[in-house]
Length: 383
Image (cartoon, rainbow, N blue to C red; front, side, top):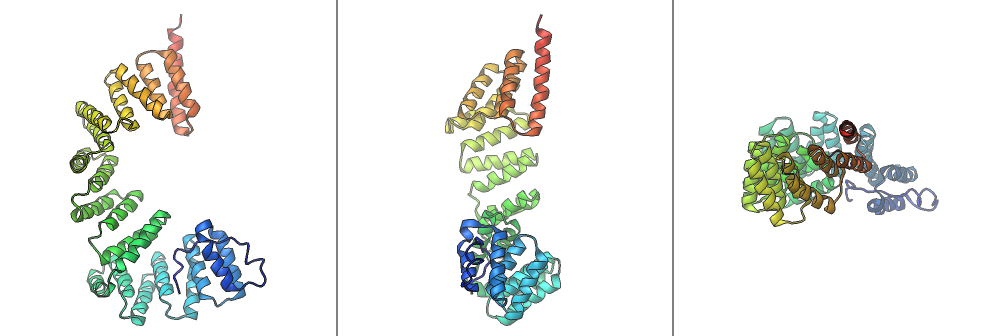
């Protein structure tokens, strides 16, 4: 039997109204429609119909449990996994799925029991050892984890690919917990898998743990020291954390490995924050030499030129940027430039244009305040 871990979903029509259709027909229809629909509520309803026809249908129970877990309906999912294991007492997929769910529920001893049952039922297979090693590491039981990891690796072959592919699929579907867990399992089997370290870094950065993400990227860099994507990713995290000197070193490294226009723009922004505007200007020029249509470079250089009072050059840059794509932030940049030049009529006009295309409430409030100030200045200037 195939695991239903990525079951996707079916329309209710078909089985609910087809009195002659079997539970198996409903189940197969659900699986077939998954890629088309991915509607968990409809699929659960369809699986409910299959289980009404045949209550002792392990595949449908497994499928429903997986969807219930994705909906955070954990207690209901647990009931379905329990039902599967009453029907098939050592069902390996049910044991592994229930064990992970029990771990999420912080019922760690019960999760360990399920993983140990997999080992007992299939002592020559790697999965039970691997899952138990993962649990032990999470619980700080490192010597036990090392023992089980060795057992798993001795039996695993290319099993890491299965876990890596499952992680990548979960990440594409934004199932971040599943993605993180499967990347970790892949790395227990293949610790030099740079792609898994990169995947974990993305997830941990997204979850607000930049230090863990930086650690993952450092591990990836040890495996692939010449990959420019790794220092680039580290630089972005460090820049977001306002650790600008460290970010600069990473941008330098990435540019040495593979110069690109966007890297020069990002490094220029860091150089500005470090009080080195001349060096930043050189980076923006270098970016445009590499890609004359990189809008970010025109915007960054225009803002730098405006801050230095180079109004003609800033006007040219903003004009090109707006020709590539008109956005409220750059229209507002032009309004501020005209405000700096005390061209109040133009400043008011550009602020009004920016407001016409701005939908963000916070940005709109700031623009409205600046527009009101510009109108007051224009009125004060009038005779």
